[in-house]
Image (cartoon, rainbow, N blue to C red; front, side):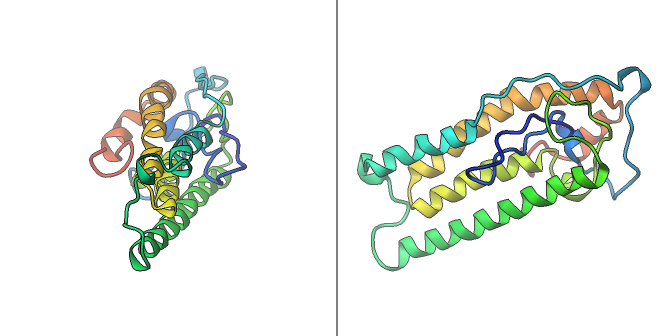
Length: 203
């Protein structure tokens, strides 16, 4: 996606993937093609969207506290025992690994195309290959997915639910501003929006 202000890259290992202009960060719509360059009139224009610092970490903590305090018994996904919780936690570890891989692969697209990841820096190209072929926002998918994975590792619906506010924040506050920026900067972005979903599948 084109540029987004990084949510701090430390901590969960899933923060810091927000680049302003969902498509600018590497969206996919077609097989790898030459990167699209912006019109000369907007060369210095950057996406302006304020992002609450460490919002993903805050969501994680908000889910971990009721689990730790055992509110509603911790809302376990699988009943306490030998097999059930172990299977859920193993699935969480696999999901976390997959989301970290997705994040790194998506960020590699920025490096390859030499376009900034952070917000408030002008997008240089519109990336439409790699993970961006299947999602306009693969870095955000990885962030939300990683929170859900931590919920599985905790074996708690509290943890899984912590991904919901992050999804809503990105979906209704961050991404619309990025998409407006991308449509203005890259005329072909509208076509890309028809070819790749905002998240995955029907979302």
